[in-house]
Every structure is written in structure tokens, then in C-alpha cells.
Image (tube, rainbow, N blue to C red; front, side):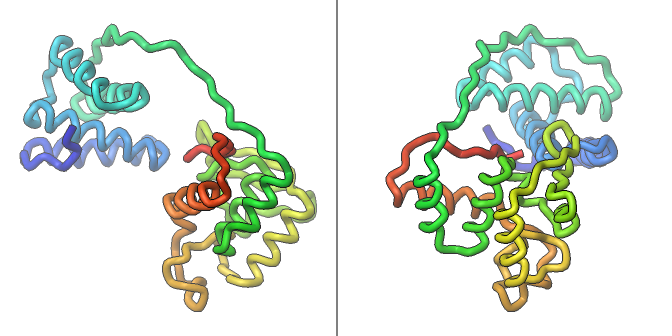
Length: 242
């Protein structure tokens, strides 16, 4: 389904108001993106007329959405539209009798120490190699590792402050001595004043000028490439995208 911005001027006004509410409610950036995408998709489906949708219309929409998207997308669109109705339209929300499929739980396979060593050695880019080592040694999610800053490292108490983790909560993670040494050596290479894993877009010479961390997509592509070259087929990614 189309997620481009509808051309309707009236919808554009509501959409801008929706963006302001999303930011003021302190939602995570990925949630804001998901709710915004949901409203654009729904607006395109109903020709921008989404201010008075009936239960029958919504059931039809979500039924069609599930034909081509995952259940998680269905839930995000549902929550996004519910937020839009409550905040932007100031209307009550009629719960939809959607049926949630059985919950499944999958955990990643565990790699041997030898396999992890091969993974780190085979990663040519220093920034990715250090990132993989850091994430695995401390059990970090992708977003948690990417957001690490110099100030998050507490070498005195040998711990790391993980900020805005799952559920917008902070947590403290033990810092292995080997990981501390690796991070110190890596920082001595780039010396960025804020990020532990600064973006690679401007090269090492201008790395201190970048204002964003490593690109998540680049990390995931690098991981897939290395595991493919090594012939590792296990589902062992220890970090989600949060």
C-alpha cells in the first residue's frame, strides 16, 4: 500500500498537527516514524478522508493490510490511527474486534567462541568490527550500541550507561575489561568528542565533524555480508533494531 504523502491540503494540516503531538508525547523516533507512515498509508487508502471512518471501513482496511504485511505492521497502523483520533481529531475510539494470532517466541542461536572470533576477524571495516565486538560482549541491541557516547562509559565502576533502552528506560550493563581496552583503542583512532561509533560518511580525516552515529543499515548489511562469506547460516543476531 502507498505510504507517500497525500496531496490533499486538508489532510496536510491534520498531518502536521499529528507530527507535533507525536513529538510532544515523547515517543521514540522509530515509533513516530511508524505512526506517521501508518497515517499516510491509511489516508491514501481512503483518499485522505480518515476523520470519520466506520468500523466496517477499518475492518476492511486492516484485512487488506494483512494480506501484504506482517501482524506487527497491522498493530502499528492500528495504534497510530488510535493516536491520531484521540489527539488530532479529539474523538473517542471504538475498539476493533481484531484477532491476534498465537504468540511465538524465537531466540537466536548461540555461536561458539571460535565462530565469533572468525566473525570479528572477517569484518574488514574497523568501526564495524569494534561495534560487533562491543555489542556481543555486552549483549546490546543495535540501537543501544549505536547510541553509545563517550560519557556513557564508566571505567571506574566498569559499567556502561545504556540510555533510552526498550520501554524508554535506562539500564546499567557490566563493562568487560577487554571491551574497555578495545573501545579505548578505537576512540584513539577517531577521537570524536561525543559518539563512540561516529558515522563513517566523512572519512577518518573529518570524522570529528560528523553529527550522527554509525548508520544502522550499514551495520546490518556488513553483518549479513560477513556471515554469508563465512557460511554461517544460524539466526544468531543478538540485537534487535531498538
